[in-house]
Image (cartoon, rainbow, N blue to C red; front, side, top):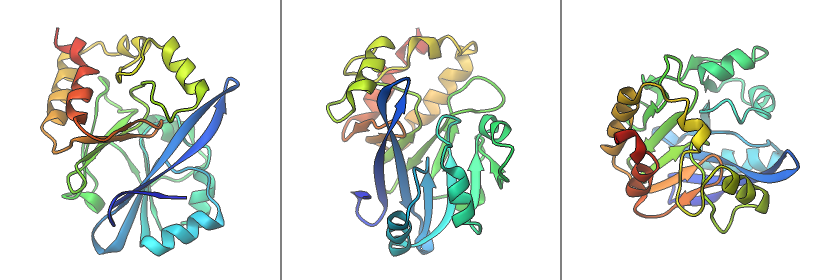
Length: 227
């Protein structure tokens, strides 16, 4: 069942899944734009109840896959919402050649949500593989599975994986992910852009929740890039 994060604007739902025998969370985000148009980020398993919930909120206009990690249920959404626009990263489009996507996610915001949501990536190559969004209305930053942390509501398996990745209660970018950033100047520019956005809360596709001071927490996850 969808949980309301911001009144008549943002909802989310968490779904457990198993990876290497450990339980993790995947989170779907629903944002209501102008004219009752809905944008879904990181769609989870689709069922009749979910379709009814969405129809009660508005008209589903776009489905966004901000990372190549979560795509298991895209086929069901594509069949159920053939009139919606599907956007994905370059990496996922290359992986899911069985689906027809309407656009590649980049640092250029599609017209559909231009002026309503902000977007960018924090990768250092020419084809962003993980996108970040901001909703000024709810003052919320939406990230994919970029960062990790141990939080009370997360499954034990995800907490164990987070410990292995070198993080505890503070959100961090895993060390192995850090090594992928060769161009620190470009990374710093991305972080500096995000830090200008109007947000103080955070939701992530891998289940993280920060209800206040999210901008400070986000910066601390990338402090090493400024050394």
